[in-house]
Amino acid sequence: MSGTARLRAALGGFALAASSGWNLANVGAVADRTAAAYGIGLAVVGLFTTALVASHAAMQIPVGRLCDRLGARVVGAAGLAVIVLASLAGLGLREAWFAILMRLLAGFGLAAAFVGGADYVRSTLASPVAQGLYGATSMASAGLALALVPLWPGWRAPFATAAIVAAAGLVLVALAPAEERRPAVARTARMFDRRLLPLGVMHAASFGLSVVLGNWVATLLERSGHSAHVSGIVGGLVLFLGLISRPLGGRLMERPRVVRASFLVGGVAIALLAIGRPLGLAVAAAALVGLAAGVPFASAFAGAQRLRPDAPAAAVGTVNLAATIVILIGTPLLGLTFSLPGHGRIGFVACAVLFAAAALAVRGDGRRRRARS
Figure 1 (cartoon, helix red, strand yellow):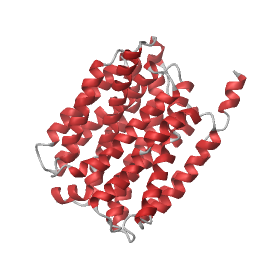
Figure 2 (cartoon, rainbow, N blue to C red):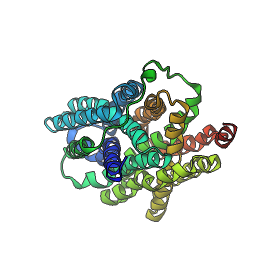
Figure 3 (cartoon, rainbow, N blue to C red):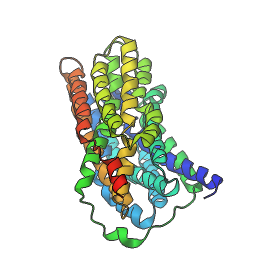
Figure 4 (tube, rainbow, N blue to C red):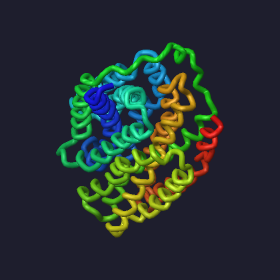
């Protein structure tokens, strides 16, 4: 592939990641505003993300199989088109049930875009670092959503910005080159594989919990006395700094001790973030969470693709399913803890414990397997 073709492939693949990340954080960025506009509580606002992630989770493995059969670029582009249509429809009616329904529809597109993009990057750019960059783009986009969506006035901000980001991505994907097709063996591949379970746990903690936290960190900081604008910027660090650590994780995936340490450091940082004040501590803790959460991404995705070369996209979908289940369950649960004493701090501490415990899932035999082969 020529240099120009690789550039177009990178832009198309990373555009799929950007739309995925944006949709996971755009509602959480303005949770209090959304609650006031729709006349609902924060727990119901959490359902906006829950609906998105429910359909996203349900389609992980089916979309992976579609990518293995039809091609990742085609499936990813179709996913972006669904997100555009659902987001534009959401602009037309300010009713919570309708918004939740449109988010449910957008989740189908989100699954196609994210899994399709991961497999497209694997097949065109072909390196763990590229996979890390793909994940970094997704997290950075979510971080930008936390920082920028509050600047758009009115209740339509989450839907309007999601439509713009997905439409721009659709143009870039249309200009990207098609990937090389795989043989038909993937059509009959069975995806129940115990070797994928530890990778799913790693991804569920590093990606799933970081998205759950990203949806509520701005609310936590606001209720700790910081302004909405400052809270959005600081909260964005939880997701945005994956732009640095996810590509780095691609280089470190053969160093399990470093990956394990990232979970332990991230757990401590989440506990510190739960304090909320002073501002300097909140900034440092959010930055550490963002950096730590990005390191395991390439180990999870590239590791899944190595384990199942017969069906790499379906393997990614299987691993990503674990993270989407965490987001599906964790987002409304963490929202509910804001009704308890401490304004969500109990929920953040629980996330800290779970994040650190994921270090137990990191396997240390990557180098030995390579040495035997």
